[in-house]
Image (cartoon, rainbow, N blue to C red; front, side, top):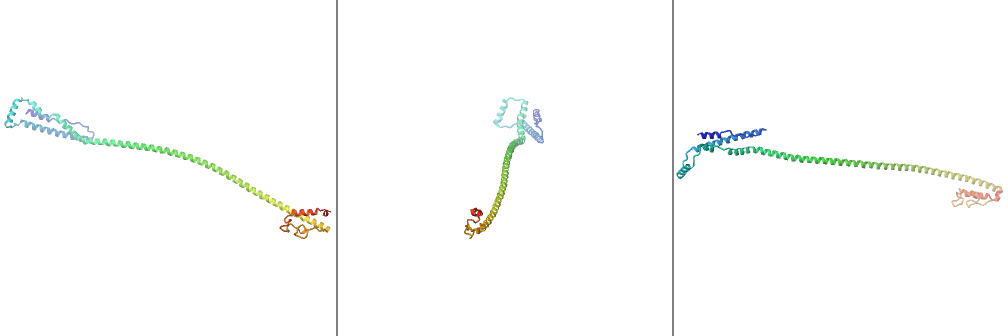
Length: 282
């Protein structure tokens, strides 16, 4: 009776509580669930020990040789003290610890899985973040390259534009000089043409003046010759076949094939030669 009471007292001891960090509501729930499971295990172990103690106190009914053999075995085996019996009936901590470990593992497995998935998500997020950061860095580098390219293109365009303006300015200057030369040439040609026209007019005027003077000279010679011929009663043959007498010859009225047609100078020379004869000079 005392051994059984000691065994019950030993089993009924309050089990150890696993101290878990209760940092959140989830940890507190896991801790309370673990404590409940430990209490249930302790109650089951207590019931098992009570059942074994009762079955050990009952007499065993054996038949035949089994009973004799059992009695002989009991006679040969020395009696053990009651303290050893009580120690056999007591549940050892080595039995409870694996059960507690298994229950703890079962209870903590969802949290661990969740934590592992969370860590995996964090790793995946870190990989994505690193990938996006690399992409953004590459975009920044590409933007810088494009900016430098645009700057070079703008510089080249400005250089080409400046060169084009210089060439256009030179061409404009050449065209302006050419226009000035053309204008000067036109003015000179116009002036020259005017001078030529004036000179031609002057020449024509001189020619007309000379013809008029020659005509007056011819008229004077004719009048003088006629006066002398009449005075001396001389007859001079005609100078050409255009008229019967010398006075019928006229450069304005002679035929086209006549030697004196429009030839006042020749006609005057002929009259002068007639007047210069010795007979008419007397």
